[in-house]
Length: 412
Image 1 (cartoon, rainbow, N blue to C red):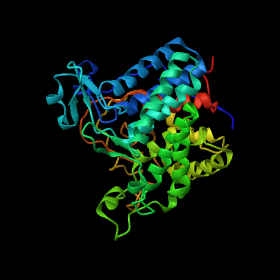
Image 2: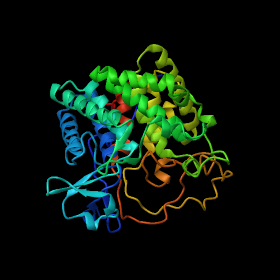
Image 3: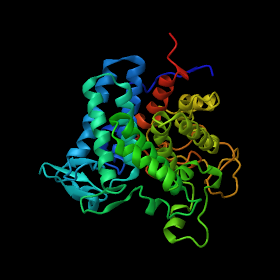
Image 4: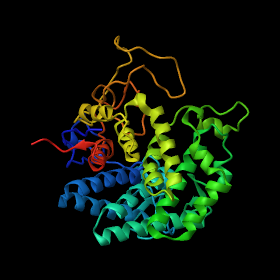
């Protein structure tokens, strides 16, 4: 498919996410943490990796270096070997944070770190570290990325496919063990998602370390624990848990989870690109295209561009470009209300929470990350009090598209 051009408006501008602003005044805001600080940084790092490969701009490489420094710090700020913190902060701030119970004091008294790390962080880390290890030619950065892949995956493998926190217990969401994954009914999304993610992570670890333990565990899961069937299950079969399912399964399948989409597609980089063999690669491509078909109504720029990594000629390039071109420059969370509009037609309630027949353009709906429902119509609070970052929302799909050659550079 012929590549399309998108103006690189956001290409060199990363505005940190801000909170507490007064009516959109950036000077009144402050940097705030979130559970997914490591994930957002991973996605920005991925964007800058692709930018550097395409442009060879020294500034892009420096952004990669600084982002890797921050992510590496997630592993060294806490005392648990191989465990990545969600975030870190100067000491003395815990009482002022929204969720102080998740914060722990670091061995270094000058710092605190955020615990309870989830699978969102893990798959984001492995995606970014894998892209860096493969595509960045700087030997020191490449080596550091591979060490981090091995560090995280050795922790997960040593702990029976769990992320083990400071208290010696698995975190709530860092669970890929068959006893957890296969306890879900076949049509509950986490069974498919966790299987897909852990195979991608193990493949990435083996690809760059060549340590047999990662390959052996992956094939054990694929061939003996049903993970191949799990990850290949069609998206059309994912839905509400059966009436006789346990309460956890029902809670986990009360609606389509768009954070799961983000985790799937970040994982597809390692699932497809580092597949153990061509046979598996063909199967993985089928699973990715099946997922893309389910996502097409959202016209989500990043999902369309990620689908292009399989080499398929049909991945809704026009819609991906539309997403990038129509996205607003203003990433401030203003009050937006569309639900009263007369030019939209509501659709019946559904599992995917699709509210209307055709998704609205990005500049007419609330600003949101890729893990949100693109059919969200309203934002009714926080008028001008916070601002998102361009790094994960815009830069990643743009520079991934440029790297894959489906989006061309700016015209002279």
